[in-house]
Image (cartoon, rainbow, N blue to C red; front, top):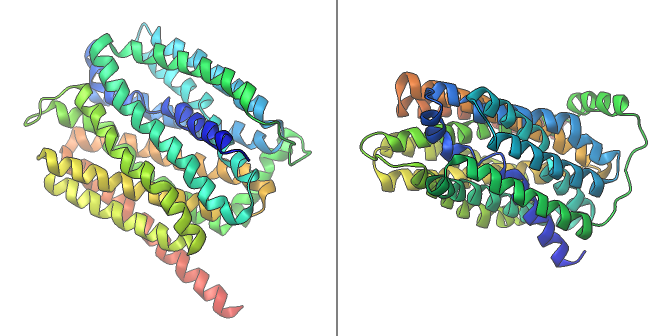
Length: 390
């Protein structure tokens, strides 16, 4: 594998997943434009994540069944079309529906990640996951930061026009730069879907990773779905540009992802998963105590991003210790549950904000993390018990 090819794949991960996050700093602007409430516009990020989970469930497993380069390019082109539909939205309902379609089609990164691991040797797969996740996180960072500033300068619709142009250019680069792949399976699509049920039933590692990942990402979505509303309120009185600037805290997660991947290779992913959950818990306690102070809010956001990305990279590195023939399906199931958790978190976050304010967002998030921590501890206890019996 050429280093330049890894770089192209990491950039592609970042640009494609960015489409899921452009809307978060824009919610206050969209609410004013359509004269809607915070609860009404909360369906935009929620349905984006629901669509992403559905796209992952139905489309990402095809990475084990069809030629991956063609599949990736087609999905990027469909995302470009969905973004144009969002830019043309005449109503909030149209924008919400377009956001769902963006989510369904913006799944190329989840085909690229297992593709990259298949192209490298097993001892380095954690490192490769870290590199891909670093690019992915950088894309999320730029999506949030850039969309806030672009929207303040030219309106929220310009964000979607710019994103569609990026997707068209990316499709051209990937069509020329990615290698062809040989499908790992020779099954019909219905048989492929049935095999997903078997994997969920037979893979306890997948069960634990999916629940922990979903709950952790739910807290992340709760924070980002309500941040723009917090910053609009006293004592801040800021707009979408400042909400977008908080995306810069993602530099910490992007920088940490390759390091966490190496740690998972050298030690145990269970160690780094536990550290990720603990860091996320500390971040929400801090955000609850210091959310009304800008420096406290920034510090809490940095801790949150570090904790979530540590958990994410560790979970995926743990899953990719299995056979390469099931990597796309493992990733599809894991990320599907991950974004179902994100959709739940977006809904709970805006509900907590509308009902109890910032304290409600933090305490609902800590409740989700308590379940994640219990899942982690029980899973480790069961693993030690089975090892002792063996």
